[in-house]
Image 1 (spheres, rainbow, N blue to C red):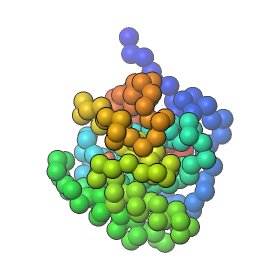
Image 2 (image 1 turned 180 degrees about the vertical axis):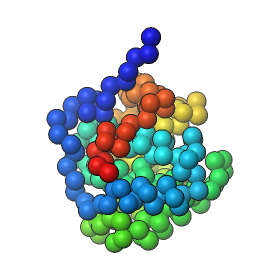
Image 3 (image 1 turned 45 degrees about the horizontal axis):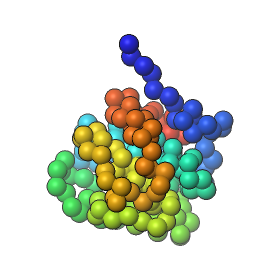
Length: 190
Ligand SMILES: [Fe+2]
């Protein structure tokens, strides 16, 4: 019998929507990306993947504590938005970093430090390295844990945070593959 996965609210034990630390026009941003991202409708790198990365990142954030959840949401939406190829596309991260700069001030506003983190996270997310900053590390881990949709479980040397190593999280991410989190579950009001 189909077993419904736990919601992100249950998984993160959050009683209230996650607080907003940035000014973001979420609906306009999602509309823009759906229209302009070459693979937005892709099963592998499209909107379902974006929300799964956000959901995974929010769970990591709740375990690590003190992270900027809006950066995690923005990373999920933007990191693969410039992919042009489902396979090898080594510069898609750097194009996403440039997209962050182009959209900043139009569809979202961040402080200088946060903007730098988001740009760095998007630009470097597919280079196979880890990161010491926990927010960037959680973003990259969230994306790498979602390789499970392709049958790939990332080796621990490619993960930046201890929280990403739990088997229970792998199970949850697998469930996201068949039932991606909704925007509302991701704390995105559109
Ligand atoms: Fe991705």
